[in-house]
Length: 508
Image (cartoon, rainbow, N blue to C red; front, side):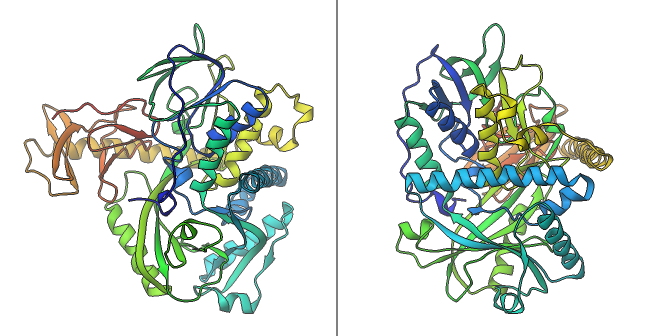
């Protein structure tokens, strides 16, 4: 499970950790949000440290499809369905500024991109209606979209009855961008601490983070961690999380270099990786084709591996692909009103900021969030900021948003009850699981997770330390996933991501 983008990437040189050191700003997370925010701040004269549990682009930022686009599937029509046109325009303007930041940074740092046409297409009657709605919403919001011509529809890699297209978008190798941003941040005087897990964030008596290597202090803290790992504001209950799969293949035929995304269900994403804009340029491989899909709520699939195999089978039946080269997954968070959360976290005395809820479009939403956070920390006056920052910051909750949130939280409650009932229906000891598998059983009234990975059998508490959900085994990635609020853990119980702030108790 290694991303195509994470091959042949030289890691940046990290900075020695100095316990007790004080900074103007500490940024937790070295994905695109964190690195863009940190670079903006350090170039503005601030003393900034970035602290990351793993490496650069460890999670979603280094595992996406590399599409930089303002045409984002059917996002705009979904927003417009229940919200005013002004909010949709503000969302587009935010993403436009994010698009310009990302492409400008890539050009400045020598990271190659290619100009592409983004295509949202459909074949079914329901999909055609969705594409039509997206075209209208995008035009209303100021995007220069158009409907595909008959020749464009016929030339596509899949059958398309209609499509909305947006020219002059970009494709990129996201890990090359992230590595360049990290290097630029350190060169500008920033401090980069990798392989340093943050255990707690404190505001009183002084803002600080507590890590496995000691504490760091700051005037302000930014959580750029996909979703906040602190429960202030209850954002775990205001977003939903999903995982999706990407598979790259050697391309053995002709596919247009447009970036395709289906409006039909199941969603399929297709893009080429050419010698000009990605990992294919760093190796002797033939041009690649990335296929994305297999989306599912975290911890709620009967078999993640089966979903991935269905995606691979679809690609082989539909596209001119050869050898599979890489397979990977990513996790994305969507707010219940479909607008990202960006700003000050409640009950932190204004000292902690965060961003989450990009709904799979982080290459434009993340730098937009960084621009807003940096603007606030630099002390810019509200009237001097782009208007979208105020519009998006003033959240409008409508009945449809409340209904979506209520439905998601009801599902979490159902999963909690089902998980406990299922775990206690089987008692330990259980047979040693086969390689790559895991099972949950009850011991003294408590769920235990037992798995075998790389020949090693481990047992951990199968209770999520966040809110007590019973974990499910992810048979594609060999992880323990929480079906309530999407925290994830290694077979040994180490925290990977999600709102949980600690790992699992190791039993053997």
